Length: 395
Ligand code: AMP
Image 1 (cartoon, rainbow, N blue to C red):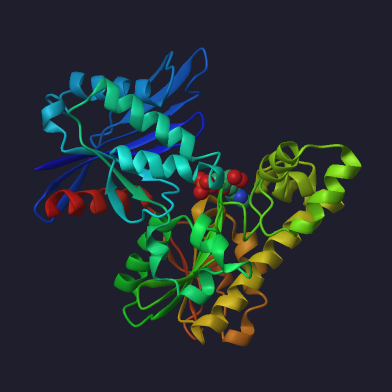
Image 2: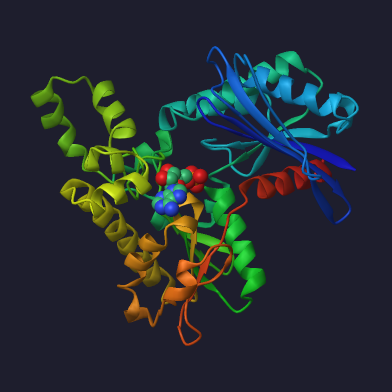
């Protein structure tokens, strides 16, 4: 049996799923989430498949301490005997630069992730610190990273290349990588199972962080994020596509340094910056309904952004068989789905308003629609766990 502990890390959050693989079988033994990592007191919840949930508060200094704490609880509750029983820990790691796919966490991997940290400054340091800390605390434990860029390795070169001097790509790796690979891979595999004839799929992963991916025959052929997680759709508080020649006038007018400007573009822009209300689409929609014009503009711009990418990707795919909405926004906002789908009748797409208003996984287009529209919950950790297991088996 392979027991694999998968981590999904945010600046102050630590989420995990603990898997057991036996032959073709895969069971989730525990799931957990710690909030306010690094604060004076962290809150955590750990759940087991039998319905038991442990909820408590304790100080957790960093992500390494979070892993040690969760491991101790799993051990206490009889989920795992000792560290030797854990086959590996796996990370839903973000930017691996020249490394892609599923890789052993070793010195070379750490060096490459450090090299490309300027391209993922909000994400890579969190993973690097956790990897180094867990290695120090548990030196014998195998650590494996599955990079979020991995699924996009199949995008044709012409679509990952920017119109910049070619040596920037060669020397600095300035090119499109794409992210949210685990989610796009999960959705692509799920649609392949649920709708076997669907060759051309567009997946809209819309949540705290958003991207769109075009999939042809199970392979990513285009995606909206680029060299960094900042480009493409504008996100809850990130800018998305933006004109680099605007940096100079902004800096000169407001007296900002480059770092200050980039900080605003990555933390105070997107839905939050545009609406001035919140980075939560629910609150922005509420404000828009109450007559706030900037909030309405933020909602309209986001929907229009999504629509534009779908149009571009339908052209790349030369048609469309399935359109999927996933992520917190994609699965929960019937209003957004309706607004986006309203302008897709040229593809023969017909949304079923009644089905769209419901919840849970399922088809939300009419029986006569030429494009099948899906509302599907994603499961990124299961993809990472499967990849880590495959990696271990291949050693
Ligand atoms: P995720 O990162 O995929 O967990 O998605 C979280 C995001 O989903 C949050 O930013 C919420 O704003 C958004 N969200 C959740 N429910 C709704 C809803 N009913 N309408 C609009 N946005 C929602």
